Length: 311
Image (cartoon, rainbow, N blue to C red):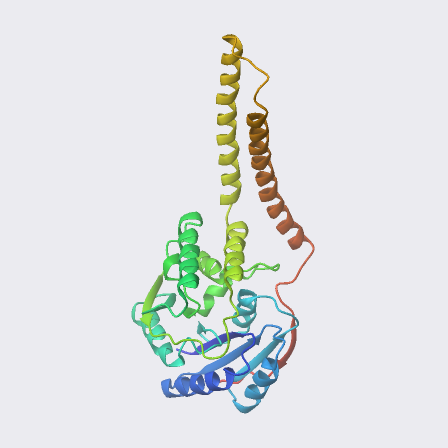
């Protein structure tokens, strides 16, 4: 088994030297052909300088510098497309995913004859709020997208490189590696791994970014929001019928009065809200089609460092 390790990097100048040193030691001890691909996602600090230096020092390390910040999953796609070996391992750049746990992922991948294995932590390495948000996202993916293995999703994953053929047509600014991998295989498993706490600075993946990623998956890979807008319109319509019947009944029995401005204003607000929600959902889909039609790139590589060498 030969291994390509892909690491998206952002504001990780402090953690990269230790990560790469430990990672290359682990891969050498496994005695497998390997490479490490560092994808610097337009980081504003010295991350590219550090990554390029590591690519010069370690023969098995290559570095890509994206022209701007495109997001974690876009950077992952850039690295995955560069991978040359049989298995791709993806991990974070902040030392929360210990390189020493990689053999567990590879053993599960090979021993259980799987195509994709996620490293699931024994204990959540994030705070309570972040963990709750993460579980909510996975539940939404499972129920809304029909993604049955969503609850085991982790950024620490190993999969067979040929799965990338399932998303060769990926284009545009919105990407989700996990949804794309679900298109290519159902032979998915997980293994319990130890994860460490982040050592340097706060996480770059904020709650806002997590919610944005959730919206991206719902709008980019599902028609569920359109169905929800239809259901909302149906329910408001049924409510309107009952309201209209009530007005006609009161008129028929002579209970009609001029009083009722508050009720009328409330009903107008309710119907207007339902209409605006439906228009907003349609607008989101149209906007995504417009972005794709404009040819907006998923990523652009500014420069490379290191050479492709089999180690």
